[in-house]
Image (cartoon, rainbow, N blue to C red; front, top):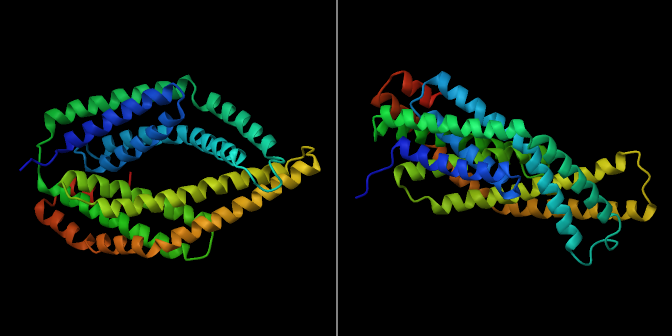
Length: 314
């Protein structure tokens, strides 16, 4: 039977993924920006279970958050430009393509501006510096990590349970009516549970494919709602501006806005169809909260265990 991975193994895998993605992001590749943000999320999920101590964990966590925040506007601008271009490529849309070409051009110029401002020398330097810091952390853990032990895996299970409870609460708060902001909170909580569950499955060699697929599907649907909502708000902002827009373009843009609204509600109906299955996953893992936390305490009631099972999220 193959041995379970250590925390050093899990960190090494994530650093390799981050390094490759960051290299592409520094070149300005759209896919590289997206993969860098995903790599950052996976590193942040692993960080609390590394034997670094609270202060060091906070320092690395802040560096990861700064990189993620720096890339966020680039990602949103890329998504907006791509979505509008995709709409433009469709045939038979409302009022032909009236007004949409102008919106695509505005979005393209805005995307280029955001990219120049965000992917500047400072952010590139920040990515390189973070890569060096992560590699240094890996070298230190290779010397100090005691290797496979049960307590941090049990603490990770408690963390998954906490993520599941948070998602369950977010789903209940969002209800069944279409409302972008509560759905955005569900999306964020879904991502966090997905990455925590991925890490648990990897750390314990537990097959969790059906549950991860359900969470990925929910995240994808909620992400499409978020993207469509971004495009809809962009169109509304253009209407609110004082620019002189030809009447035909204004009507065409308004028609495309209505189409996006219908798309949001269609996607919301898809989300609702899978809502019960997502809640079932939450209930299954949230029920492990107390037993997991109790097992961690029984294993070693020290500072490291307190940090691992604490409610503070990095």
